[in-house]
Length: 146
Ligand code: CMX
Ligand code: CO
Image 1 (cartoon, rainbow, N blue to C red):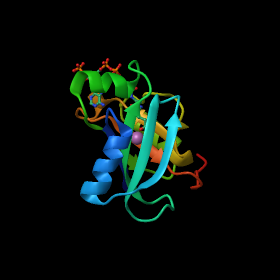
Image 2: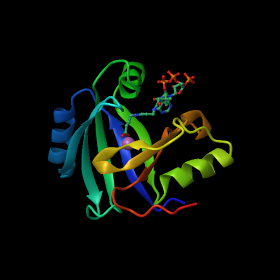
Image 3: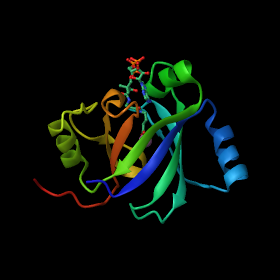
Image 4: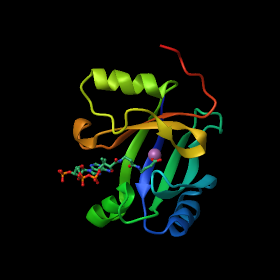
């Protein structure tokens, strides 16, 4: 079902400051930066291992575009810190259905657009032991027809 930790999502107030911390402290560099209006974030992906072939793992730094967004609300409540964990799959729609079949709530019925052209779905944190869990199908990877 899941083949890797695709990324760990970290909420921050100031994306540029967080990028500088991860670069200067840990040596990670930015692979990709984008604004995702639908998710309400400005974000950076810092590759922790592998290559940009859809099988790598990243740190995802997330700055909210609006206070009334998932990351904006999280920051107001908790301050900066780990926001979610994302598992990689080669078929996110099938993974979402499999999780629903196991009684978990997906936060959208269909996959949405994620970082770097990926397709994503979230699982409710209350169904995952308090961890907001994302499922990611990387751009350009095969989708199995079911
Ligand atoms: N991790 C763990 N628990 C969380 C959480 C998180 N990130 N965000 C909210 N919760 C908990 C709250 O603490 C709350 O718990 P209690 O009822 O015990 O107080 C519960 O979930 C419901 O909280 P809420 O205030 O009603 O929920 P929100 O309106 O903040 O929505 C959620 C929560 C998960 C549904 C929403 O954040 C969501 O839809 N997230 C998915 C999309 C997203 O996070 N996008 C940004 C990242 C984009 C990307 O990765 O590309
Ligand atoms: Co994410």
